[in-house]
Image (cartoon, rainbow, N blue to C red; front, top):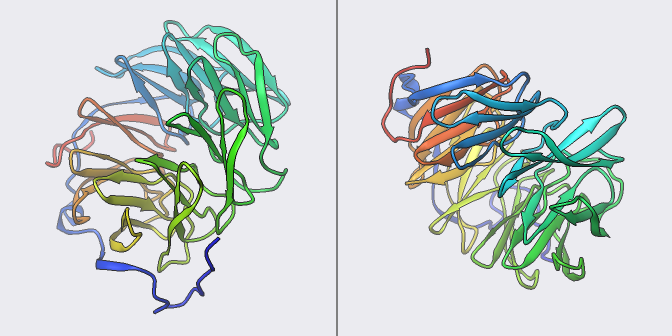
Length: 364
């Protein structure tokens, strides 16, 4: 494990043509993206939607299925969902739900939202499950990473990977036949997804890490209680680099990557751009609130939400603000599909916004 650098200026952290940016002229004029539609989903949206086959699945007051074309509601299931993102595979939607005093894991028919199976849990789950090869992997507030049969809900295996400690639980991640889980104590685990056998584990700097990003053989993860960003070899867990941001904030979301640039949202109100190979800081852009949203990159634009109530669209190259959309509350993690950005807000609405670099009409 690398040595911890003292948190002070001039400590040798990598830099690369850094530009310290604040919102530019486009933001100052109030220009905004084109809103296609918005629909109220019963309560605040805390997580990312899931888009597939012309339908947006989102967790509000329960799980909602919304038509991507016009925002019409196809169905809703009030028994499913708290704050975790749903996921879909084939003709089934999976979501963490709740019952009185208990958590539940549900498989819903994608056509009408009716339950196919339900599994009771002693702890609520606030994260998105992962589905692949007929298996569903999920975590909740307990000590275990759990895997069940996606068709029946029957348990396949479980692995103890963390203690019953306070702090945010991150979602599992699957890439190239390895299942990853980040424990609240700062240990990253790599499992065989079929058997639960541990392939490796590595203790990083920090605690309560956010859900890691897997890309091209590298695992990128942020410190959930501090401003550290770290990169590990996804096959072995060996450290590649570590960057301590010039910040007193923490990183509670999953980074995004495009080309050789890594984008990291921070509670210090800033989105940071780093060299993905070395960790060198390239630039950052400042918003008016903490960033509790995972960014997403599409066609040269980075989209992310801020607790200042805006969905932001900035240039992936230099951080120049292209447009922003004002909502009535903090904005959760967006997704982009077929030229449209979908994002939920604590104001209770799911928004569909044109993913265009050009500003459009204001929100009605």
